[in-house]
Image: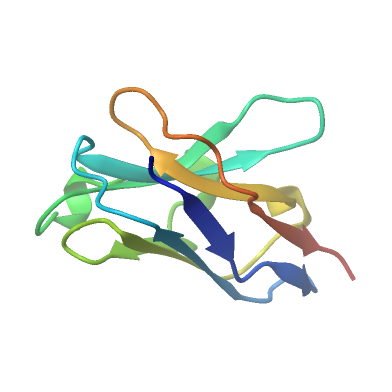
Length: 119
């Protein structure tokens, strides 16, 4: 059973940066793509960014329109560690961020990490 643990969130002012990390407890072999998701209270998980296994050209990564040019996603080759570099943060980026498979069924959701952008 894969366990996912996210970290790196916090409270930052608008324009600030954060780097989120996600570590999987074991191989995530059944997925070809990992993603970062954002959840607001009472809402479903919303896909923010994805990265596929192997050397993925930037053109084939997915980023939600609202974060394009501000967020970057990286990962190790096995997708057991994934990162989300968040620059130029805006108040609307606020939410709880999770990593999970973005291809096929999700793994059990981890605890997530809270990102709050506020002055």
